[in-house]
Length: 194
Image (cartoon, rainbow, N blue to C red; front, side, top):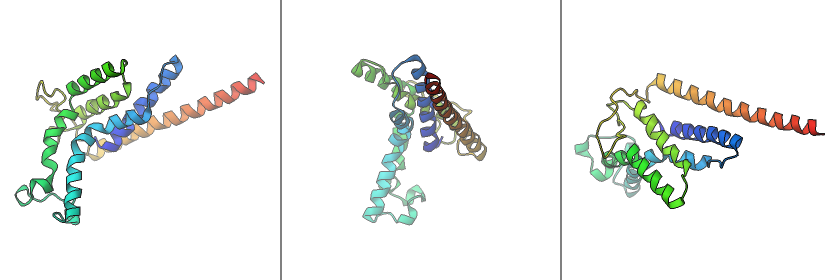
């Protein structure tokens, strides 16, 4: 799934969990941190190659017009390409095993679960089903197994994008309507108290 949609789904998840926590009187999630962790796997895997390409453009070894074009590997140095490293970083940031280990370590350090990290787990779960076997299939069992879900739907397809962003629109309309209703209920309660 694209990084913007990952951010929106993590944000929506945190908002819904905050609504539940508010009703139960529990501690709320940081929406900003949950959103960050929702995009972290892709930032970890893909930021390094983009940084290398930016440096290559600034140093003059790559023309700006070629920034998003990928010439044949034989014509391009590994430094200019930069994307060769993605294959090495991607399994670490897209593994439920690695995520669970980090979640537990952070829990031990803070002596309580940091639920904001669930944005990372949500990212992986979404990617398992929204990446086809041809384009970065999610190695969610790394390093225990190299098995990847073979029936994923390509997130870049037009139909998937329309459905995904339509669902996001519905979810955020739900949050907006819920917020308006809460404000109206609070106002009517104040009026009744007078």
